[in-house]
Figure 1 (cartoon, one colour):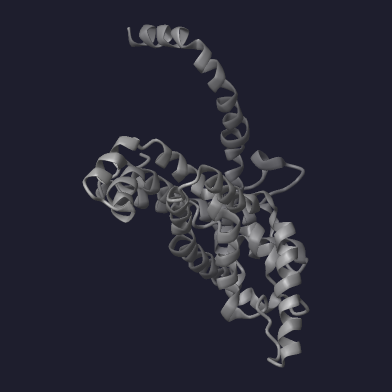
Figure 2 (cartoon, rainbow, N blue to C red; figure 1 turned 45 degrees about the horizontal axis):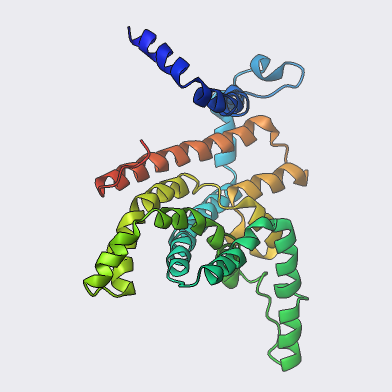
Length: 305
């Protein structure tokens, strides 16, 4: 009976299901079917035998990478940089959205929104080159400081300043783009609420505090869960295009570490070990996603699961 009702519902809304079909096929082909490759984490990959025919090695791939001393440095940097992104970068998109909402003129608001959104469309290859030319050892800032007699100022090769530059440059690039979803949520708030608050004597700050923020905190909670789930990624594109050997001790995350080892030629990692690192990251990300979802639900929000 239930199957019959489900089929009738599918027929009734067939056009909606037809629109959904390409998305389902996309995830099946590119996300779920390739997951059998995760078994490489427990195998010694041999090209002539393929993934399924390669011999099992148990947890040897994990033991190998965990004994590698630089792995734990990269792991620590990944956690520290990602937590910094959560604490420093995540709130900036919310702040930008709230500030843009307070701009009175619609044309001026669109102008600022365009200015803040534009950097998102530039790749880190381009931005990394610009930042190196400005802040690098031979960049414009270095030339100005040398000319003024302040000596060398190597911001991009200084371990004390590199992470600050990571956060600052990523805020400049992504805060405006991240604010779009919050602006969309704010646009759905009834103007009558603001009019009623104004009649009651509430100023703009109190309207933001008691109307705007309660209306978007559910979206904020959901975006926070998604941000926590991606905490193990760290931002490969940005770091790879900005860092140098001088700041490996504070900037080398798991992704850049594995990339360097794979192409350095000093060690032969193989697909099994690289997949083991990827699986290690995925398991931690899943655990963080579940914990964040649980905490958000405990705080009274809906969560994702």
